[in-house]
Length: 239
Picture 1 (cartoon, rainbow, N blue to C red):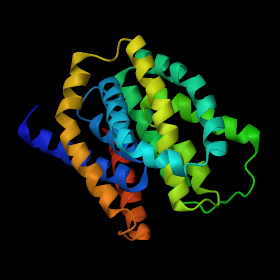
Picture 2: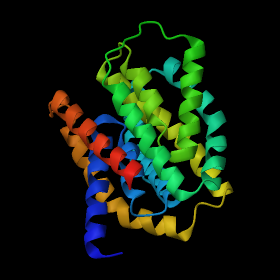
Picture 3: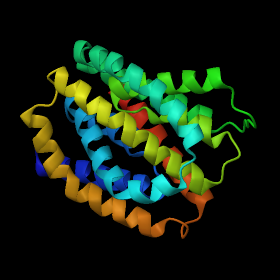
């Protein structure tokens, strides 16, 4: 791997860390399609989960106090049940197919995120369905965020509550995903090496994102993230 490729990958990781620290989600949505262009998707997905767990470790104490547990627990429990199923499919699929699946999922998520729908009383069946879909996508591609983000951001919760819900949900489901990857034999030395090389840049971006929370214009940031996600999704589909 040449130095220019490593510098590009480190820049992507830093941006993903900033996004995660600012909003409480989004790192996997950036990392999975972008890094899968440079490394094996199975390695990327496992590395993304390790980075996300690292990010959540510092954010969890505050999030546990702010999260709305009546919303988070049903989502997390239904997600946990489907994480191993997604991990099983990840271990079986060809890398190129995994990369295109990731790109297609991200693209669909961004298009849905541009919508303006709202809900006031979430139904229990819908809640469990959203959680289960997120768990499957977490196991398959390390990007279980889209269904949860759409579901939460379509509601009436303030940004602080949504951010806390995201952090708690991902912490619970990603630990299960890590165990599932380990059982499938995907937690290799190559994954550990990628994690060790990326974690400083990711941590730096994460800290900067946390500092900028409540100081950056949310509309401008939203547009930046959506534009970035569209770019990496298209690249993952056509590469």
